[in-house]
Length: 320
Image 1: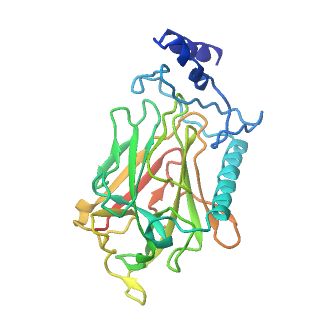
Image 2 (image 1 turned 90 degrees about the vertical axis):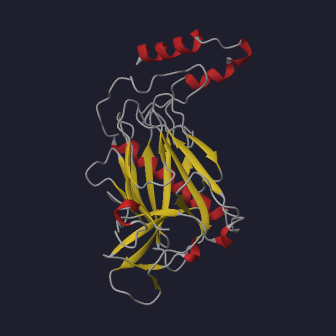
Image 3 (image 1 turned 90 degrees about the horizontal axis):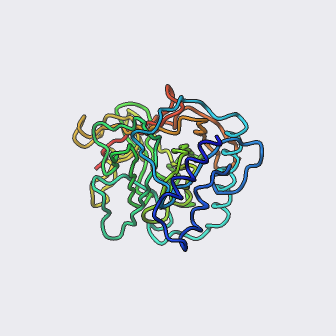
């Protein structure tokens, strides 16, 4: 660890940085932190560092790390912090968001643009260095760069337009939670998917829009989802098509009908999450009782870690 610290310091010092710019280099220093930047204390041994100009790395030639899980104490501390943030958000934001009439949700646009009247939310995730982030099939505007890092775009739309669906099989689909109001069609729980992103000189960033109550910072990314059910037999309050929002978009799920384009409208997007002391989380919080329940996947398998808890698979379906 000492040699690693000296190596990072030498990279910063050897860069051509003016003296007046030396102050930001404190972000090269390694610190044990919670996802919101507050200290977890001596209990947590996980080390994560933020990216700063002058602290450079070659992500594709970084050493391959053995995949290991974080200690139970670290995982519980991360979950406690995320749950606390969710409750804080729900107590603060009683007013409606400026768009989508109080029921804002995020869908995945086909292109990296949102139409007039729809707020754009975009994040950049710094995934495992020298990792294996992959995508196949239809994944809309989501992208992977040359270092295996990913861009995730959502468009904010009117969540109350989404109802129960008639699918080819009983399952559920997911919408990104972007507000504090739940419709009667949404499950009475909030699904949380925490991704422990790359530890070394992390470059996570919110590029556009308001991601709340979701979280992204140098430690990781926490997505929150609403789940809405679908059955394979038609019934009351069920739609046979997803609502027309005026542009092409996708949602998360594993249904195969209705999907625009059939098989060509289905895809998977897998992120290679941090290998060393991985603190990935996946759990639901009951909307009424606040009971927290851990799981290996989100209901409906729109997000899945069943066979690979240290990485994250998103199943994407083109809805329109």
